[in-house]
Image (cartoon, rainbow, N blue to C red; front, side, top):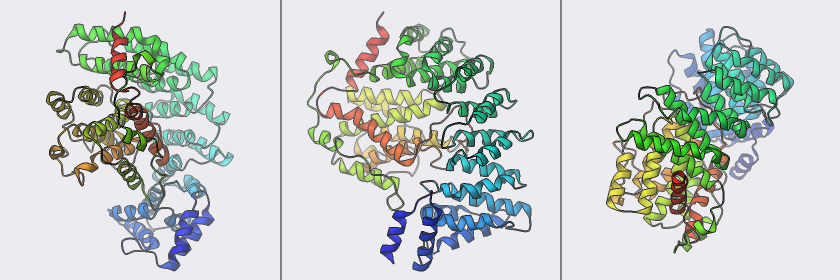
Length: 551
């Protein structure tokens, strides 16, 4: 029975309900239990707690998350029941709990889409909104029924949350964007709620290649919509960097002559620099702007609160420009490298995530496969990971220079690993991320904190003021990488901030996409140095500063 259950797990597919029912049946026959309960007993616990006014569902949710796809059939059976409790509020609570549980398995159980779509006709507005949030996770195909139901939800005149979530669900449809959906998104750019307008912009970001009507609407939105300007700039930079460049240049120029108390102007200007960094080589026409910003920051001196922020963000744009094209041969400096690490990095990356081998185990196993590392090797790997985390942070809070400052301090330590640079990096990284942050920011902050600890001596590698000490000092690298992975997997942990409704847009990645992205970032950053060919930290730092200083 054990072999049959293992085979059923391997064959289980979130798109195939029949395969999940076979897995469920084998679990029942084999007496499979998790934490002393069967999957169906955990589902029953979830239902029972939903009937209580203040039921505690944490243990049930964690158990069902661990069980994964095998619990989906039992959850769908609950949703199929037309009445789950006498009181409508209790009925709604149960359905909310079940929908939350359906959003836990990885990969998503897309076979649950029909059952979730059926909840859009329930009388409870809470259930309708949660059902649409579940559809955002499940990514249904753009069938006529799905499109019609979600477009109807966009017409809700009383609940802006319903309109916004319906647009979010339409933006995640797994297929081409239908014309009537595009027209609805353009129409919602004039909605009274800024949250709805941002969701409409998110939907327009799916329209590739964009039509002239979409690009023109985005350009108008940048000018007319103060509350959603940064999102409109973000989408326009995705769809047409050439059309976005003049608007980003104009917005970033506002940093020159900025009043000290102009927080909105600072945020918009710094966010424009962040978007320019995301454009890579296409941002090269803005080099003149970067030099002007740096010169202005130098003239204002260290007493100005925005001076350092402008400088580090301008340098991040220059860094992206230099890294986006092959470095000229004459700008490369060869070194001794690390042949053993080069051989390890040239091998395969972390294996794909599955129910039997979760993401943390995959990352730990891959880091362990690199073998014993010197402190410089560890820090170089952490710099690559911290660069990813800094991009995540700056997407939400560019007016806080902590991420870029930590990254710069780590680079400076690599160039000169002395006590002064060690102390500087550790002082910048000495913070405890707040649970009030959105999930991706919370994890990005922890990643940067762990990265700055790598420059410390082994006996000093303890985590801030908390008890979250890694199991052993040698596991700190894996802990740092895992925090960056969770930052890329937006919503991968629970914080007080819901995180699903922000002023900027978040790129959603699957578990395997996030692992592959991090692996590629570390290989690109460290492998050339390990081979002794050139140094992606030292050489790029020199070239980007030359770019900012040349006239």
